[in-house]
Image 1 (cartoon, one colour):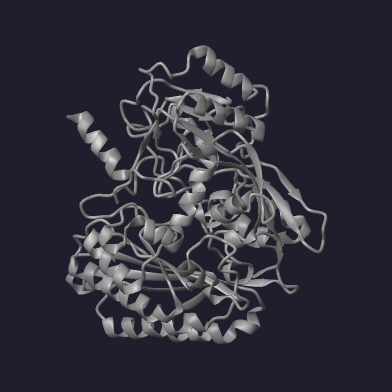
Image 2 (cartoon, one colour):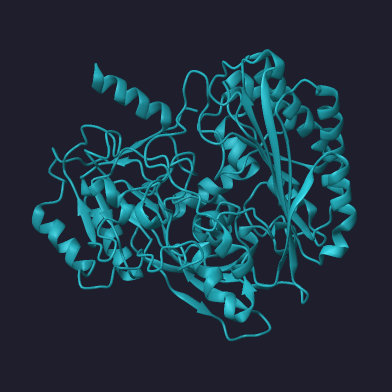
Length: 569
């Protein structure tokens, strides 16, 4: 009965299974496993995930940091100064990684430490830590020879854990591919980065040149998954999305070939990956990105805040929210920011169902005095300016001062009877600004009516990321990359909190038909279009054709990625 339940869950969530398992002749012998380990060069330096100065503002974060990790070290510090090239087990785990970990009885299975990632649980049979493209080729060839499902991840930050669920398969971690080379062409500045690089590392590397790359808001996010999935962040309207900044990449495909992809070479794959996202295309070993400079006089960071210990004056809240959603679309391409609406349900009748606070943060590519009118507009609706900071160096004045966004190594966002799981979100165009306000009011009212007995996600945080190219002064090309036209034209990426399929379908009907693939619901009903439409829209069939050209046997897999035919919702 337990096996049937597990299989049913795997089918529901879309886990992939290798064609081979330890009971079959295709399973590698110990001698073949040893040969792979030798091909991965055990003598190579694998200390690249060690944070040598583990304090805030110290050395850069080289990977995602799991929650409660001592000294903010990756992989909970396990063998962090000298990782092995290969971790291996031929046993199915009796229980999920870290599921029973306590202070007195901590996790001790090395395959679990090697495969630490956000929202994880299960572990693959093999975890490889290559340090070169040639070692990646060896790992891919091994997996192909033994009919193993392949998945890939770098920093482990992915909220949805899409890239590591190949049971008895191979997980290739690109975390140690750390090349950083700045071009010498001053007229077309680019930086070549290994695919295991985090934004914390690359912004630190570029700081002496007073340059930066387009990035996300979290400093521990890896440049690769963010970039190829679309990539929204504090420079979206001015510098473009992540996909707009990729000039070239190198990738090991399913047949073990190492390809260089650009507008001139393997251009179909170059188009597909930049927006097709995920690890379904192969193992990208490096990327070349555009670099950018702050304005000569620098930029300014603004933070605003408001809070209320009750939800009784709904008229004032509604009026101020309407005004706020009128202000946002008037901000030009120099502005990029985020706003969090956080609610705390309560059964206290004097508080009318909930308490709430509003936090807003904006980067302005200009001086403080140029933004006075906007700051005054915020104050008029009760949003106090709690911080104003001049940014002369993006690395020194933002990146080093930011906290890491910690990873949870156990299943945290999985679907339930009351929640679709994941990070439900919608890409919203300018003309629906007022509808965002209405969606927030609806959710506050639903939470308030629950009188402190809120189900999963019903009182979750609403997040508005006002950092998409729908606000760009000079429109970026809609055809050069494979994101949907709705992504290209969106003004906001809105994370809507959770809820049932019925709740979310109503939100989708109000706000829009598409989501940002790196932050989307884990389950998407057919009533709302299904995951292929919401994630890839009009591009899916073209992307699938290219996927089948370069990976005809479907060796590379990730959930809700191009070529995933196992996920039902």
